[in-house]
Amino acid sequence: MTENGFAACLAAILNGECDPNESFDPDGVRSARPFEELGVLTRNAGLVVRMDDGSEYQITVVRSRGPRS
Image 1 (spheres, one colour):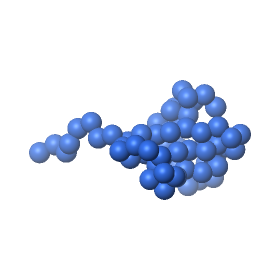
Image 2: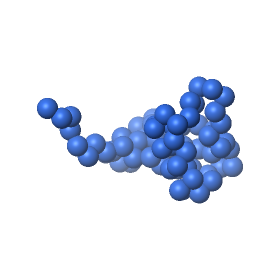
Image 3: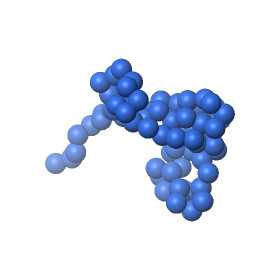
């Protein structure tokens, strides 16, 4: 899976275009674990996603805007 393909798959899940609870196989994801749990040296929150083929993706979560008042 390419980076763009992975991003498109994640966007589909977050936009409710597919239900990950209905036997959805996001193209071979083996695991998704938080940066902190894996000891990734960053101050950002995020996930390391490992694929069945051994490739990895890192998703960094940075708030770009606070709640609206």
